[in-house]
Amino acid sequence: MSEQPASAPVIVPAPTTSPLPHTVAAALKRDGAGLVAAVVQQFDTHEVLMLGWMDDEALHRTMTSGRVTFYSRSRQEYWRKGDTSGHVQWVKSVALDCDGDALLIRVDQVGAACHTGTRTCFDGRDLDVQTGEAL
Image (cartoon, rainbow, N blue to C red):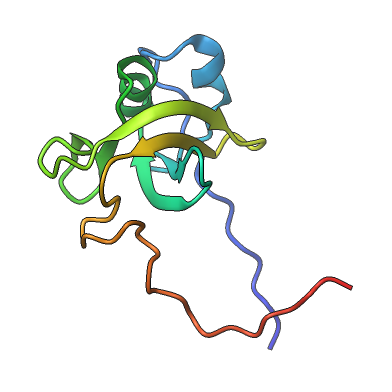
């Protein structure tokens, strides 16, 4: 069975009224819903804590407030991490990847990052894989 070619992702242009600096807004490659994946990492241990989604406004809030704001795809609204749980993410840095389609948000995480109560959204969720090693 041959592999089917992957369909090209839909890239949404920057909104005409983006709150972001022009250079940042122009560099982002958004999905069909206008969102960019945001990988959240603990700044000092480098643990990958979670993955969330941001549009221009959520990224702007994150870059200017010192707290991480996401856009909830299921609720169709903004949510600032920790407002209800107390598990705040304090922003330490924000980086855009080389393709412009993902963000790395380095934070100082207070408490659990996952809504299930675990430190990260990946704790205890390892899949069985065949591992390899460098030669």
